Length: 215
Image 1 (cartoon, rainbow, N blue to C red):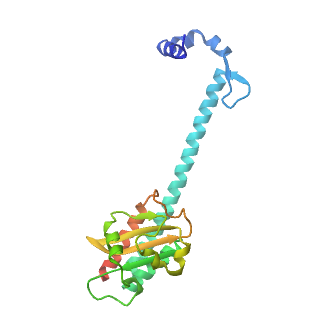
Image 2: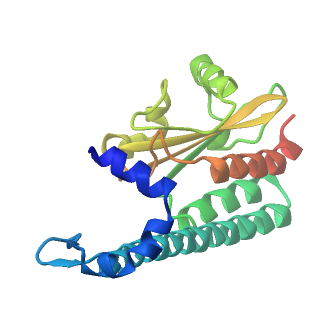
Image 3: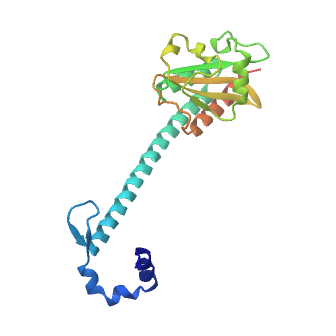
């Protein structure tokens, strides 16, 4: 008789357990974590305890994720209020850089904007290559990478040599009119597999606040 046949028999004859309850109490099986043999009833209790522990671990993990999401949501809310309160493009840019640095602990941020009309004499309006503009236009979602894209490494100046992870968010109003680049010396701060929902919302907020001043 094969093990499969035994299993099938027990499935088809559940009354076996009632008719041979005394016999089941005498069966000894290996402890799941090694060592002595234990009754089958004790093994069932240990199995239930293991499953309970797995569920508790999963619940703790979900709670941690929920707390992290709440914290990020609060930071985005503070940034939103700062962008709404900004009365000119200088204030919008300053609020964006300040909150990313102080609230989100992003050590390096660079914003580049382009327009067909006149623009303020700000570093954010420095010349941007066609490759960088095309890259921004190609982004439907934020993009994270271990390497600087196209020619954006030079945007970070002397810090570029020490940067190991990058995140790019295109600013769009139909078509792209800017690119927000963030970078870190930590290789795990931005990585290709990470979720980008909050980065996408960040880009939408920044684009909405900035497009009021972009011709």
